[in-house]
Image (cartoon, rainbow, N blue to C red; front, side, top):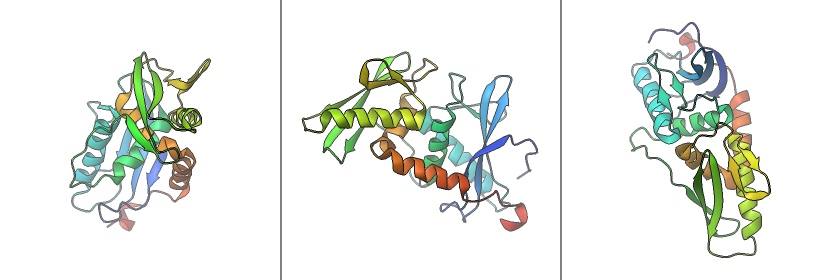
Amino acid sequence: MGLTKDLGYRIELVSMDPHFHNITIAFHRQDLDTGPAYLINSYSVKDGTDDRIAFVRGAMQTLGGMVTTSAGLLQFPCGEPHELACRRLFLDACKVDPDSTVNVRPLYVLDKKSGLDMVVSSLGDGFYNVSSKGESKKKASRISALTGGLMKLGELHAVEGREDQAAFPCGHAHDALVGVLLVRAPNVRAALREQELAATRGVLASPSQQR
């Protein structure tokens, strides 16, 4: 695999990929004339590295609704970076078993703290509503907490007067991406700690160290 000279700046790192020989995979952002774009890179020269990178790229497209440019970079169709959410998406894509089928995640999740199924609905123009199936004394507080989790993980904006709604500032729907964030939203602190650890875990290893 040829080495890319202009990688952009690194925003996330998987220091040891458990699905492919513990290689290091880095995630870089590039700010282009056409808008922000993302590059997945590894200096590993092991046979199959290109295929592994291609799998992660494809998983990010499916799980997050991203598209690829002619240069093989990833972008969101809206043209906005959504960088924090994209970092979460990259980490989750690297965890997917390459022997499994990658599917878009549903817009509902079991909230273990209340025992309720939490459901997220798209209202259009980037707005999302959080509701629940069933009743619980914790219903209102958990809906508010999950909505706040989505805002923290995806940098969504609060909706004035509503604790059950949030919106993407770009004004576009991102249903697939919300499905990824929703899995982590009930325990947002743990998700953010994981991202912080990944960001400080190390540096991208040189080719000689990844043979």
